[in-house]
Image (cartoon, rainbow, N blue to C red; front, side, top):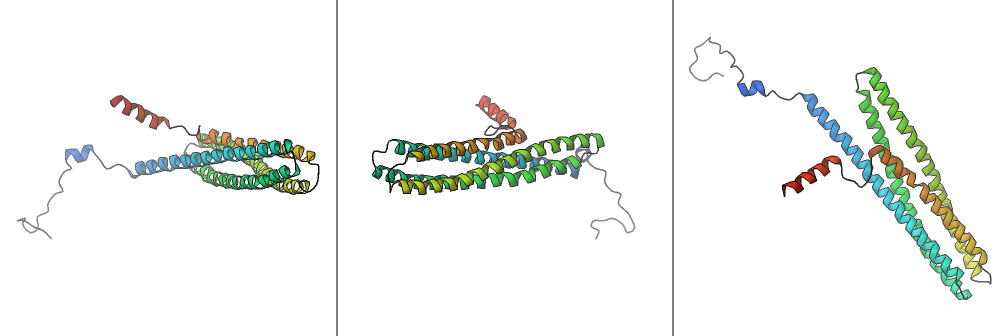
Length: 242
């Protein structure tokens, strides 16, 4: 519908774009897509780093709980003056070992979270690489992706084995409790000290080997628990302006 006084049959010519419109065109859609892709990539890396931090914190907590349980039990058994003291040490071991079990369960959960997150991480890398138009560069990038993926698979396989060792040692700790209980009903418990020491050393070694997941994760996303260079620069700028 026309308005104003234009005569019938007259056709208005389209107005020329203003100078501002000519100099400031709408950004192409691909720029928005690239920005979104960058945000997705950073979010993926940050999420993996967060899961790795949680995993390493739990590994340290599990190690501390194990060391506390075994050291207290060893001290009690080595210095037990009577059968009653052995019974008290046995009761304490049951409680402390149950606490270790809870920490191991949490550690397994944290590891599962990291393992699941890396699936999306490597998928993101491969999907991004597939968008490279230069065939030689695309092949080079994919080779690098495959190399770090294979390294991660190897480390994850070792971690899975270490977790199985932890599970087996939890059962060994349960068996040790039964033998300690038997020892509290009869004289002689020297062998339990050596069994307890061996159990603690083997379990501690398994927990130490699980640190490889943290190290391998740092190879993927960089050092953990450190601010990014961008955030550090922003903090420095803010400090200089104060």
